[in-house]
Image (cartoon, rainbow, N blue to C red; front, top):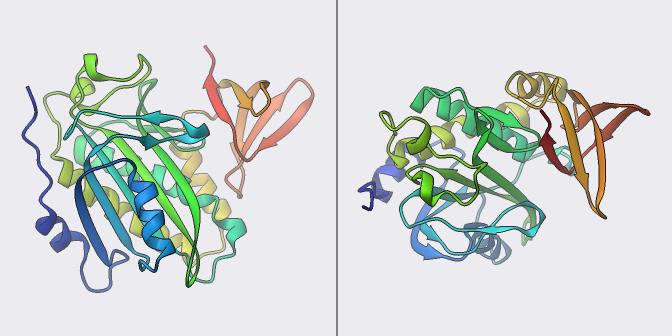
Amino acid sequence: MPVNDPHDVDRLRQQLVVPGSLWQRLDLVAETGSTNADLAARARTGQATGAVLLTDYQSAGRGRQGRTWTAPAGSSIAMSLLVAPQGVPTTRWSWLPLLAGLAVVEALRRAADLPAVLKWPNDVLVGDRKICGILAERVETPTGPACVIGIGLNVHLTEAELPVPTATSLAVVKPERVPQRDTLVVTIGRAFELLFRHWETSDDDAAFAASYQDRCDTIGRRVRVLLPGDLTVEGTADAVDPHGRLVLLTDSGRQTFSAGDVVHLR
């Protein structure tokens, strides 16, 4: 039976699009292929940054490595954020998806009392199952580069509706306390804004690395990093460095990775 949890766009605007906020515009569409693709297209034609785009049904959501996914209408949060850090060199922008992951973790802990954690670089887990994925993409706009950050959070999906056995949802892990989707959208948006504002005006990325590590379940684990060209590296995840890269202790020494799929080994 479909869950009755509609987005209330007017209420969302009242809570997020307020004077002085990072968020200057919020739109909701009933259905689209990809909120990231749509918001990137808008940005290329002049959409101002500080925009949030939500949909009830995403038919061709995109993840890392070109993967696609979908979920029943109204069962998830599918949203994209458009930001353009001011005065921040693009070499630091690799932190943006990691900040989004931190925001989702904090939102789940606050709004749902769930011990959510991060799997490097930007998956959110509850236990050892993925509840949220994040994809950040740079886009060129008429006023300079910007970043679109897509967030897909499983909320009302049943066990049978989950795409893979390694996925989960709020309804599966805590059926007695599933927050409304709008509560989660607002909590994520506010948490991201706080992190973003601090990061944008700071040059102490080591502090962000420490905060990230504190929430990262990858650190201390034996892991396998999957790289392009069917290459793999195994070792123990030792740290996240000030650039947001994963530092691995391997048989051949310390290695650092800026990208790659990570598998937690048992």
